[in-house]
Image (tube, rainbow, N blue to C red):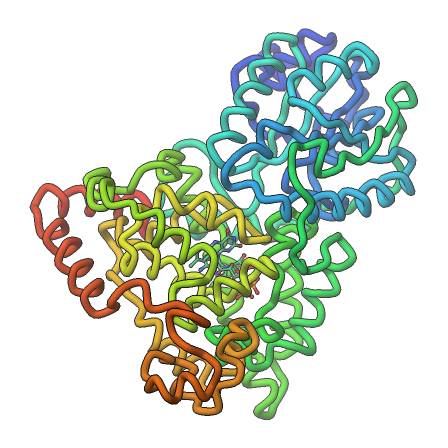
Length: 537
Ligand SMILES: Cc1cc2nc3c(=O)[nH]c(=O)nc-3n(C[C@H](O)[C@H](O)[C@H](O)COP(=O)(O)OP(=O)(O)OC[C@H]3O[C@@H](n4cnc5c(N)ncnc54)[C@H](O)[C@@H]3O)c2cc1C
């Protein structure tokens, strides 16, 4: 048992007021405090109901707020389905399908420990207000969330409510993201340190709060959403562990080769993103399991072990990227709505073409690889990295659409939507960061390289499934009228004409962005972006 905590008085706090002062309550966001120190002796304070506010952390394992709460008194684990958040342009019915599935499992896991998950549909401060009436004095715990503007503002409202009602509220850092002022040069070391800290065991038992009913699980309609029809990945804590384990031990040997190909990537990539997005597994747990596997493979000989070591090293980098990108939005929430370099907002501001947007969004551009990828994303909620980048490039460069207008809907299609990854990535693939190489994907070249025999395209663009000549699958407009008739695929009738000329669009985009980036004032701003957000690797 460690030494008892002492405040400036040189003795342990003795009453509620002194404890709250010791905890730093009332001064805005609290610092996380090591509870084993506090528990070194019994605090003489009335028991509070410990609310664990679940957001994107739908698990019991490696969940510090849950463990801290369980150490202190009766626990009320809470999820609030908020119509105001679900009304956002980036919130898709598929997100609620997944969250709901994860909540059902979480409720059962918590019930086994003595207190089921309490679920409410409503707005967070009002739900807290009604719980205060039934559950008595409260203490609130949550993980820090780097969300979109809506969740950011909601979090602020909850902090204000907690302060106004003297409800202690502790937000615990998560995903290796650092909140508040910090030195970018030290970020990577801080990330390693946070991943290295021991995992948190789930509490064996929870002291229940009998006065509060668990409540029904809200439906899509309760949130103002239509049901989702997408064929989504399964989600839940058990499934997260199964997915990770099968990637580390069975799948994933060809990860590096297959990750760019939309077909093979479906099984060769880890597919852990949806679990990280909703926190059915913690990033720390993924890193922990990865390191264990790397250790096992360290001494192993043979080509299989060598290939796996390489694959896991690439996976390792991507787990860093998860936090690296999220950190950008954490440090500059404005980049959800504004280009890193604001002057880039003017580039496409007046050029929104609704017909081009519609063609892109529904996979009817006349470019088979673009259409196949978009249709696949719409149907399943998942796409590999390169093809997400290509779709974004097509919208931003070929269709010259303003990323600020398509990014929310595009994010909504992704089952694993994480604002902290999504917005920085969209800006990177739209050429508005000022620091990254402008990469304009050629959709035909991508098709030939990443789907050489056209299997993926034929699967997702059935209009082209009867074409015997693979070259035509990638560029059906090359068929003569007679060949089109013979193949039952007349361009402009059975399959769309190309909505843009890629070469013209490429030169237009290159010139416009190059002209802007050459300006000295833009270069000075780019230096600032690099200093603030750039990787030090
Ligand atoms: C325009 C665009 C938008 C994107 N939006 C999202 C998003 O909303 N949510 C999301 O999780 N990923 C997003 N990505 C990144 C990437 O496409 C997905 O993380 C990946 O395809 C998920 O599949 P996986 O888990 O099998 O990936 P793996 O290749 O197995 O990677 C493992 C994990 O590493 C992280 N990761 C991988 N690539 C990246 C990357 N480039 N940047 C940051 N983290 C990465 C993810 O957490 C991923 O789950 C986006 C990429 C682009 C180009």
